[in-house]
Length: 197
Ligand SMILES: NC(=O)c1ccc[n+]([C@@H]2O[C@H](COP(=O)([O-])OP(=O)(O)OC[C@H]3O[C@@H](n4cnc5c(N)ncnc54)[C@H](OP(=O)(O)O)[C@@H]3O)[C@@H](O)[C@H]2O)c1
Image 1 (tube, protein in one colour):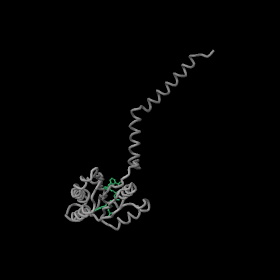
Image 2: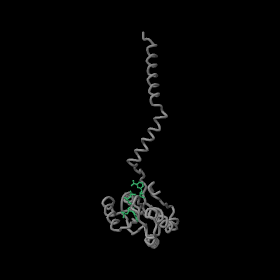
Image 3: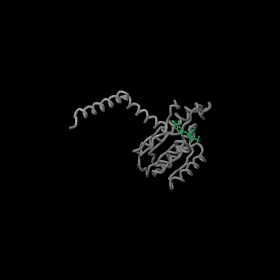
Image 4: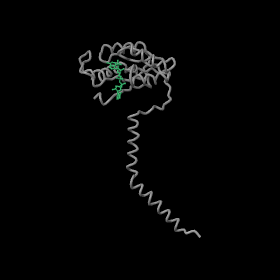
């Protein structure tokens, strides 16, 4: 006949083992560790937008859309069917970006317009052009930015980073605000960095 105590002993050993494990890695230390891992993985390698939303019929303006994050954003928005207006200080670079995007998106609806955020005159010209030609602005992405550049000044004499990153985008937003409000649902997105402070 089987000894029932032998079974109980086995159970006791199991409990001891699992208790030991809990002592070494208590839950309250494992959870933050997991959270930190997920956060830093997202911080270092980026997270991918899972949205499949379409933007057909929407008009988007993106400053600095010819390079870096702005160009990638323009590519994504164009692939969702939006009309994307690339606002850049060098239109040649803007056309090159559109050419690259054309290789990945079939017949994107894209426009390149000149905008130098270091010049109030350029910002006003750009805004006037947009107000005359675009009945709607659904999304304004204030993305262009500079950091740690050599000391220099905007046309109006403001320090370059302050002038481009903050004053230029503020004026642009102000000039387009009524059209954005009239296009609701609409939104303004400011891309920033701790380096802008
Ligand atoms: N990359 C990062 O790790 C990071 C991290 C946090 C935040 N950000 C922010 O994300 C935004 C985009 O960064 P990024 O890395 O894509 O930078 P990037 O590759 O250097 O692109 C910056 C864009 O801004 C444009 N720009 C600069 N001065 C301008 C001016 N006076 N008028 C109009 N456009 C101007 C540039 O035009 P040109 O091509 O003619 O120079 C370029 O298209 C910036 O606001 C940046 O601070 C970036």
